[in-house]
Image 1 (cartoon, rainbow, N blue to C red):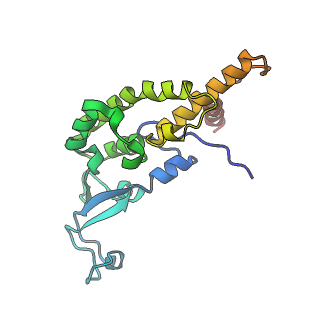
Image 2 (spheres, rainbow, N blue to C red):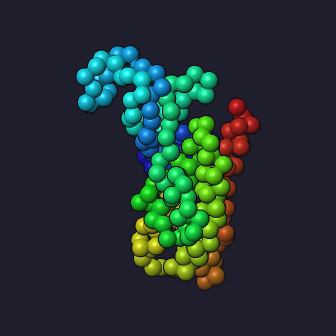
Image 3 (cartoon, helix red, strand yellow):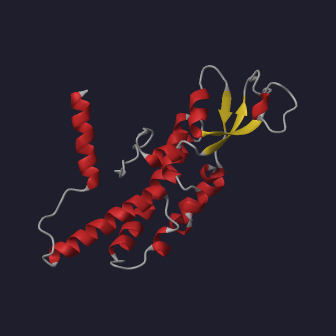
Length: 208
């Protein structure tokens, strides 16, 4: 059975049919318990107690942190991963193109959007940095995809976030399609897979 790629969700939304979003949900976040977790001490390797006491620092996958986090009833506090903290935001503001996003992530944009679920006083700055980083790197990403026809692109994409890699592949696909059409080797131009998947989702929503 072949797998038809499914686009990830946009912004704070998730698409659980997308492999990228499934992998994103496994990203680990630094957390602190704001209440005791009775009977769960076995989850902590170095714990001597049957319980996880209040104030314990631990890492949780994104999906679990989102499930436990409540604004009214304090169960856990979620700390910012270092790449979204003020020091790194300053680096991105200076020149986002010098950063190896894949090494820092590889889901920098997706995880940054998901961090807005948590009530942090720095949410506005995080959102602005993520947006400006995307804008600042987008042109270079697409220029690279258009200037690497029939070339080894591994060096070009190794520093890209997963979203940027998907955009790079779309740019390459569009360029290849145009080259074939220009040489008369393509019978017709076809719609982008992103457009096709969007139409399928709209039809599904109307039928639901």
